[in-house]
Length: 156
Image 1 (cartoon, rainbow, N blue to C red):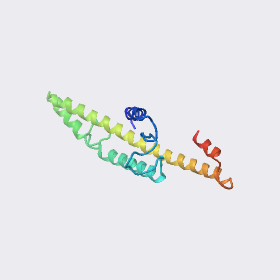
Image 2: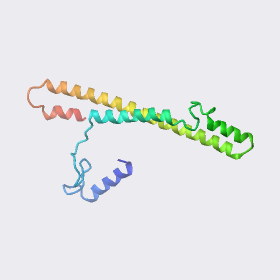
Image 3: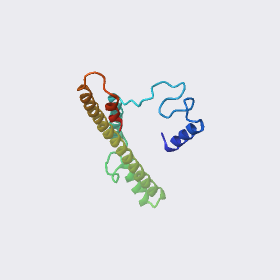
Image 4: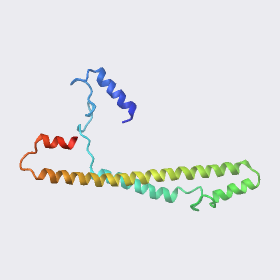
């Protein structure tokens, strides 16, 4: 949720009096399915991270069309065409060169974003699993129901 949406939601709650009939920020709205709790499943994190990894690989292979696979952006066919146009004093050559440089820069930024997403979700998945195991180990040591005071410690 964007900051502006959050502020609008808070204003709507304040305008409605914030009572039971007003909007609640920690639950779904009327007619929407689901519960009030945020649920993150290991499979969901893994699937999104895997898709980001696949996108990174495909973009890395296919995103270098401007340099025609040269890898460095200076010797591909598009850059050779730009150099040839510039050598004939055509303005299109420098514009084509600028386009290749911008394209290459943008592809690198998207590749970095995909790598960041994939790595972050892999890390989040592992940390969530570790947290779940620690909580399960802590709770399983008790006989009977866990007291509310013990559960409350997890939310601080």
